[in-house]
Amino acid sequence: MILTYMEVREGKIKKSSLEALSEARRRADDLGEALEAVFLGKDLDGLAEEAYKYGASKAYLLENPLLENYSSSLYVSVLADFINEIKPKAVFFSATAMGRDLSPRLAAKLDAGVAADCTKTSVKDSALEAVRPIFAGKALASFLFSSEPWIVSLRPNVFPLIEPVSEKGEAIKKEVTASQDQAKDQVVEVKREEGAELDVTEADIVISGGRGMKGPENFGLLRDLIALFPNAALGSSRSAVDAGWVDHQHQVGQTGKTVSPDLYIAVGISGAIQHLAGMSSSKFIVAINKDPEAPIFNLADFGVVGDLFKVIPPLKKELEKFKE
Amino acid sequence: MVPDSESKIKIDHSQNRIDPEGLNFVMNPYDEYAVEEALQIKESKGGTVQVVSVGPEESVATLKKALAMGADEALLIKDEQTETYDGLRTAKIIARVVKEKFSDYNLLLFGKQSIDTDNAQVPSMVAGLLDWPQVNIVTKLEMEEESGTAYREVEGAVERVSFSLPAVISAQKGLNEPRYETLKGIMAAKRKQVPVVSLQELGIQESDLESKLKLGKMSPPPTKEAGKRIEEEPEEAARQLVLFLHEEAKII
Picture (tube, each protein chain N blue to C red):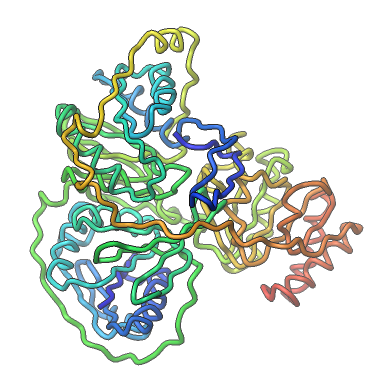
């Protein structure tokens, strides 16, 4: 059996968990294994149906009031007990902040291996092979496991959802035992600011600015463009962050975030190797730069050689015109 | 110790590894935040900053840098198996050394991940093996006598996490501004010895470290061919770009 961990935030299943479930469904088919989903939380009513839709035949709902607020130590303790009981062949996570926090601690508890932030999985000779970028994507490495369970976390936004299937399955609700002293660390507050910006790792479109933006005041130009798309986020190069123009959470690249949106627009970014590493897996890449020699053009599906301060205003107008 | 972020990475297919030729090895950038945070805690609350590395003899250079920044003591655990992609091996070694030598320390700081394997596993694995609390990708840390509060950014929100001590914390960019080594610090670090212990001396058998993850093939990332490039007047360039987004990328 393959088990998929379902991440719930604010009462809703994360889309990236459905991606992980979809990929687990494909591998379960290859292996001839069942696919089941596990949820942890305080009150998990109404979530199982979504898991059936994306291929799970069974949903375990592990409930306890102490699981309302995320705790790495408590969640792993509950998950490890559960996994030791049901013994899945593989456990799939999405490589979100939570998935990358849980999976290694769980692996340590189970003395298992974990392939983190994978971008491809396949089955060969009844074994799971997982491919993951290393050096921020400057190379790829494939991994096999030498013992079960095989634990993988999958990069969000890379794996396609399956066509929704049956909405029927078996829900197994379990009141699990948990004590406060198992929660050695616990989230006490989640602050989502009003009008907070979308995170680059969750966006379908990322518009990034670099050194060519010349100063923090000009990032408004990019934010105006972002506002024209439904699910777009602001990114940046390392130099724009190090210059203090934008916050580090926007940084894309080897010491920032790795993104694979449908569209990546690099504005005034020359394309240092450490930046390219973080965005080269984007589906479409557009570059706007006045330097025709900028390395970013070698990667761009569409390059505009020109002064960004002259190109962005008419681009905004054209996009607005198109929207009408 | 990792190749710096400007490094071009070449695969040495004959040995199924990354070719070390011409790489410039530096302290992992995220570890700099961890060292800096330790120094700041020491400066405001007291304590001792011990730095530890697992790796080949060359890792002494990284430890010397940490000493030059102001760390009190350094220790190298010599492990020649450098091409390991299984974080559990490193985590088991670190958990063991903490139990054997540093059981009176109450905070273990790590970089959130190394920028070579990008595993982001060792901190959580060490915490799991020691049964300590963990908070990863921390951008702000407040320490009390027996507990602490950490802030971490998760997909567009900020989580405030309280934890008891001893604890494992991994540092994200934004936690602080790592200091540069001073000349005085570099001179002092030069004079300091970095003790080296072997796995054997720690009582670790190779059989305890058997990898659960086997490296298969390494390959370069898929290459992308440059697409269309235009050099038109801004208005015309904007019009063509929007057409591209609609017709080819099908984004709008």
